[in-house]
Amino acid sequence: MKKLLLASLALTVSTAVFAGKPDAAAGGTKAEQVCASCHSKTGDKPVMPAYPKLAGQYPDYLEKALHDYKSGKRKNPIMAGMAAGLSDEDIRNIAAWYASQTPAVGILHK
Image (cartoon, rainbow, N blue to C red):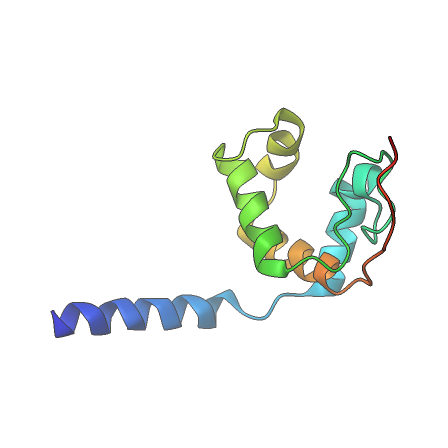
């Protein structure tokens, strides 16, 4: 049991080390190519009120959401198509980009 726990811990640590620090600037470039048409490059002014503002969101939330869209666990045909072409590194970088942006406060239009 102890060996299994140590092996699991080692795998977790090595995965985190190899994943590296996200590159928010690269995420901004990718967001401009993939996300900006709906959410805006900075994520504070989506093109439609129903689209979420991504600026200032927690990066782990954004990563999970994108992975869930990509895997089909979270259902949205548009987002599934957008996330399908993103690598794990792209997702990590995009999440870092939007998390680094200043959140916009506003009201939902009806």
